[in-house]
Amino acid sequence: MSSLPFPVRVAAGLVVTAVEEVQALPRTIVGLPITAVSQVLQLSMRAQQVVTELAIKGDTALEGGRPVEDAPSWARFDDDSSDTPALPRPATNGHARPVAVPAPADEIPEAPEALPGYASMTTAQLRARLRTLSVDQLTELLAWESSHADRPAFVTMLTNRIATLTAET
Figure 1 (cartoon, rainbow, N blue to C red):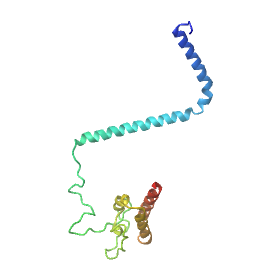
Figure 2 (figure 1 turned 120 degrees about the vertical axis):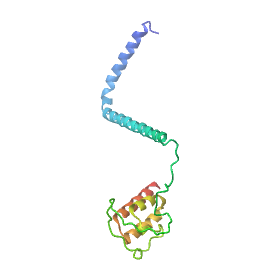
Figure 3 (figure 1 turned 90 degrees about the vertical axis):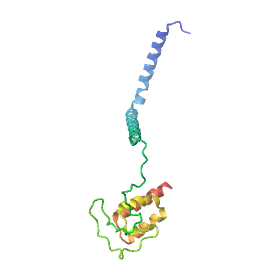
């Protein structure tokens, strides 16, 4: 054991550590920008997570424990059965204007078996149903779409969903 006082020994240890860090500086300075960017990104992502958690807690608190209706009484969906048959809606290109005038009901080609009523669906209706369909069903719909209506938005949606499901397996 050294007979020097404790504070002197601590100071000597700090000097040796500083010298070692200066000697290692050329090796660590190369990775410094990457390390700094990585830490900034981690902090940013963590901040986003905290804000999202707070928003979720706020939503829960503001709801006051009220149960949310699955389907409000005023909402009407195409799948709902009613006395009057639903008229087919024209396909849109994401705006309110129709892309094409739909054919009369007797001129609409036979829909594929995978999804009854597919021929008269809008892009929003198809998008809502995509997750319930298998790759085989999607492939059937894509083949039908390509040989009949060949609507670009539908072809893109079906192709992307098939690619996503195929990549997951």
